[in-house]
Image (cartoon, rainbow, N blue to C red; front, side, top):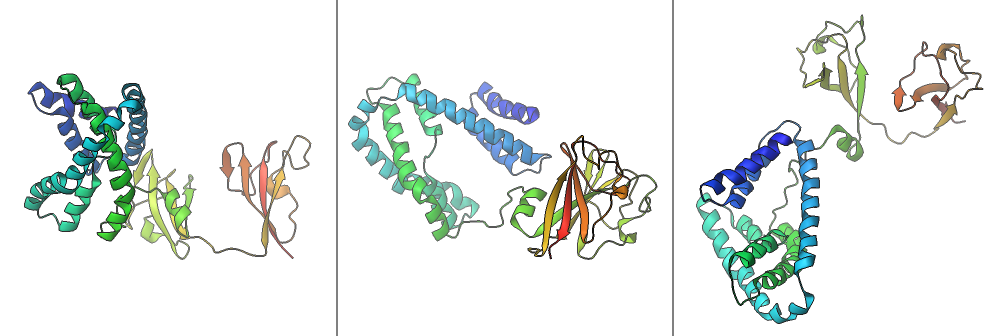
Length: 313
């Protein structure tokens, strides 16, 4: 994140040294980075989304100090005329001149043209213009009204326009994680460790007999994430992540929680020493923040929570 912030600073400062437009430069740098494969890109997007939200709050706080509602009625008519001209003449012509040489489709050009001046960037540039140039016109409040018009008209209708122009990409890269897919589609991801002397150690994935309809999707080794294939050889302490189809709604089975406290008869006993009732199975042990997949050699401690699967009669 620090490195990308440094790139953004250089992207603005370097052109400014030579008299160029630092804002345009850093914008282009952002487009290039956004379309580049970068490690931990999801974390970067989350970080900069938060940073963007913070800066937007700061800008609109500044806007509240500079805007005077009493002066807005005086600029409504000129702002509305300028906004109409920008929306239906100037911006479509400018977009066509820029995108036509790159063989941009008409639908793309129309969508970009309709995207408008929404957001705080236009107001920031108006503040800079107001400070740099002395003029009798109230540039700041005029731009403010234009942006309001753009938000109300173009911003409100943008989803509808995108749908009408068939410009919604359902296959866009949203950088989902395993958890996202677990929430949205009937698939589950299972993590298991390869302990010392396990019979899988030293074998390749294609030599293993996995349960039906499962796939090894990730291998974690020494803090590194590896996308495996059939020739990947497993080593001691490797962690495998498998995918499998999640079950449909299971009827006739209920889950019961049993808490082990200081006075519990289960405290200090091995799981294998606990009498097992018919049609019951301990499927999970929660110990603080840790989730343990049970086996007979686990010794129960005070504070453990046993999750028991029980067949309903």
